[in-house]
Image (tube, rainbow, N blue to C red; front, side):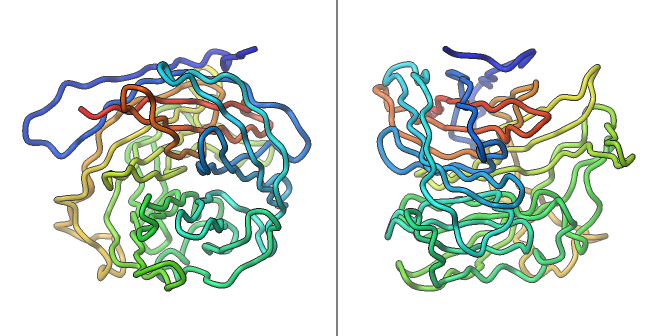
Length: 338
């Protein structure tokens, strides 16, 4: 039985087409259901589509990552979810705090984004065995602020392009988000010639996150836990990059605001050669357009493109973290061309 997140306000925003802009998609929230409660299944940080109704997702409760196989059938017309079944697939070797994962469409292996040491590793999804081929990330990403490191990973359908970024600005690039301003993030594009060839960073584009909309929330240690940053990336078949921003703050009660943006990088500055964004001038950030958002107790951290529906629209599947402050939920979104 479906259980919508308590007090979650789901709003699908369909904006009118603007002549001459570079945006291509519309979004409509189709459904939200509760996923099963199970040991080691709380902190789900990423999801990737395998085929038909099958997805792989990763949890990292107590820094012991587990790869899960999820069965998520959707109605071919509405995109509504029928149910969520899940079982453990593997335990990846050499991983600590996996926040993003992407299935390699060329060889079926699994790429993992580990926030603890800002690495992108490769493993066998069925056994968890570590495989060769770690991605060399740009040095600026290694300057991440603790707890605001690499959160996202996406691979294009042709398997030749990979995207990743930090949750918020690195120590080289500027401050974390505040109520007055967002944070400066580099959207990093990697490319490879073919399967088995190394990934190379080939571009970095400035992206500005939203400011924190609510008030601060402090934990038992007095630390401010409010934030507003990038929790996931997703690349569409046409190359469009989608960005999921996640905010935690207080508006009457502590709550999460998750916002899905479509980006347009055509006029953005490639900052690959810029060592620091602090004080840098004449830099143009990626344009972004809000597709939809959720507000409530579901903290969506993972997303991926799923199957095609009867009318040609695509399913975008999201999973929430599900830690002690948030609900364990799955969200389906219908994406249609404008």
